[in-house]
Image (cartoon, rainbow, N blue to C red; front, side, top):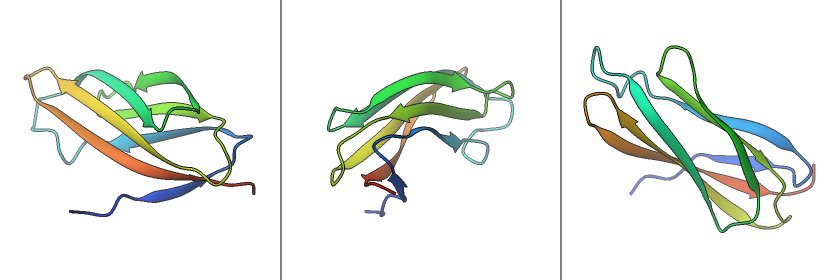
Length: 95
């Protein structure tokens, strides 16, 4: 089991986080849909986007409770029918 990348997230911040799927995508395949979730619930997720190349995804995370660790996950679907997930850990604390 791999360790998730961890980022510090201030509870007063509204910051974008994202993934570059370029190395995972097969030549000619592009991301057609992307959804985000966070566990436990609390922070607000907004502005879920797929960039113009259809290889990068991102969303903004606002809020959270100081001292809480959150797992932010991105689930994607591609034009060729593939799907996968990527996740990171957000350690919420005052900066």
